[in-house]
Image (cartoon, rainbow, N blue to C red):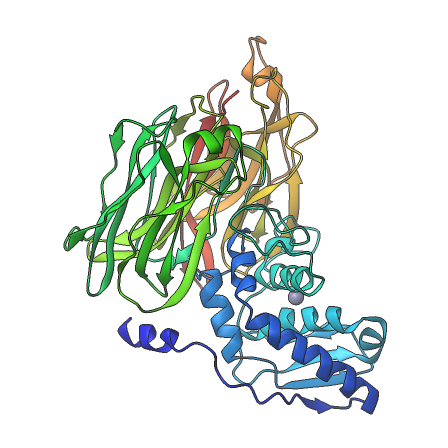
Length: 516
Ligand SMILES: [Zn+2]
């Protein structure tokens, strides 16, 4: 890990400025050279990582937005082959970048679009895939698609450069769960070690990041919760990671709440400071930044600059950490609207399959529940993800109000089995459970849908509809159905390789009772 730190600390690699060409006409070379220069500018613009960090990234291989952009800077396209066939393509995971575009594609795109396409293809060169069919909900959230969308947004100048507040207009997916009430920021640092989630109790928000740091960086991280008006001390979570070192002094002044963490990170968290806003501004004047203040910057000056901020009107409600006994690798912030302080209760099930391989915890942004599944499967389940929607509008009667969709990023192999498209429950419905065939691994899966009003109300026996099976039905059948009033909102998964491809070995669904 130390060598990685050194490498990542060197930002801004030299680029020759020259693309190599094969089979391209003089006018194509001119157009592509202009596009290549534009793409290089975007790649060196800090807005790109900021844009990506506020969006769901599927198939990111556990890397943060900053690390992805850094890798692409070092692997910028140097060779474009112009051809008669196909549209565009690029080999996965190669050293020495190479992309292919058809004459027709080049002729019918402007230079901004070609720049965005180039970066999409370089992302493929860097090993990021679309592990599903293009009609899957996951597709638009994959790294190459999001990079393309952010690039166009930045080049078209409709990227909102003050990413401290607000969303990116043209990027896919909206804020990770841009669903009015809650959001989950992108990962900072890296996904490694064990996942933890710490959430403030009902009606309270994070007022301070707690943890420890020393000359090697941030060693541990947790949260301390206060009332929604920024007073009191209600709950303090465990510090996840290594408790050694100096105590972090990331406590917001009284009357304020934590709305973000910024600092530096690479494959672990090096340096942090808290961003605080007045609780009354958050509640009554969302977007007003006049009361913004920072806690001291602590840790070490190495790694890539990063910032994770909640959307306007939202404060940090909880934190998802990736850590081990010897340190902290990464985190993401769970944000929630301050004017929204109702209760949310979780219900955990028993696992199906086995606890083998990497454990991950993936949940819809708070207050949202799952409406659909996507994945890959053959004889066994290779990959699984889900789409999330908001079900209740605060203060309103029981109904489905989600107008935007967030995803629980896919887990498992990018190649095994066949991809299947997202299967959404019908209008007014959400997922209330799963049925699974499993033995050593998860072999097949299907979703169970119910009407949100019926499932939440007193209807004597709400109709539960099963979606089609995916995978092969062998082993034992298990049903995991949420209690009445609860809906599927995520899972813990265990993923490992079997016969050369990544499979889902174990799955432990989580249901929540969404707020209303
Ligand atoms: Zn692609």
